[in-house]
Image (cartoon, rainbow, N blue to C red; front, side):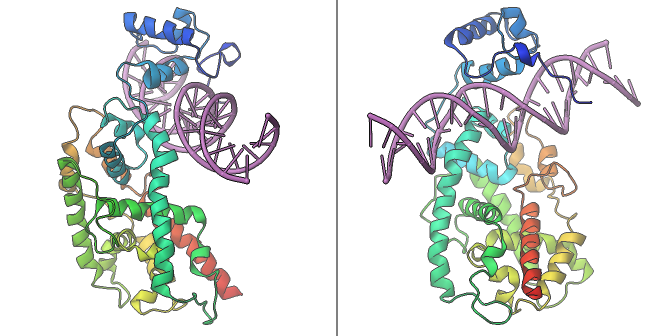
Length: 338
DNA sequence: AATTGGTTCAACCGCGCTCAC
DNA sequence: TGTGAGCGCGGTTGAACCAAT
């Protein structure tokens, strides 16, 4: 049995709101408030609308002090920074931008900001690929194989990875992996600077661990950090997007087909994903964002990194890494069979 | 001028969460 | 403690608009 509908679908109007409907709703709410019950509100004021529709119209359009369009560069930066940290939690992001609605930010991100970032990335990757590799990729038999590497991943997975690293570069502008550090360096607020500082210090610790155990099979105790290392490596290594040789072990002196991927990634992904939980201290900076907003607390930050949570964001590094590996593994297995 | 393809954004949908009973 | 109504959120849709051909 499905959920009972919130209203009588047959008797409610759908589609764009008329000026008269807007005026009716606005006048009532300004005078009496919502009364704490959106479902009952439209009947009270004689609107043939679903209560949810009224709520949405009020919150996204009629509410006082709503801003539409004209996002500033500073707002862009805040959206990017928060998206890196928390993903598509539009309501939380909107809470940090007075006058902006979650719907507006979501639309702005999906239609403009994301494309702006990806556009830059794709262009620079095309150039990097030509200038860095300087040769066609080889398959396991040492033959030229244009379908190898990149095409083993779906374009969707590639796009998510590209975006993630592009955002990482924005967040970590002095990274040595950033080819052009000054090209997109917006002025950052003190809060953003502190967020970056905190995340950089976490990444530095991961880098130290990274240098220790790629030359041999990791010991069980080292695997505790293994997943972190893979994530850190992925997010910091621009080349992984341009040429998946890194994923395949070439840059570590391991040829594709040697078993590196199957063994190490399997360990990293299937056995050790539970250690990726930041401490409260690591997220002190976020506490500053909680200017009385009940929406921001450490609980949702922790959930973001809880790989057991069914609600984890599909853009999260764990999922990206996992999907990337799965797609590689599929291509890899097909290569071996053929 | 007509057509086509791409973009934008308001609005809808469905699901998870909260809270009163 | 269980249940259901309402709320809030994120993903998706589709009409309107715009630009290119």
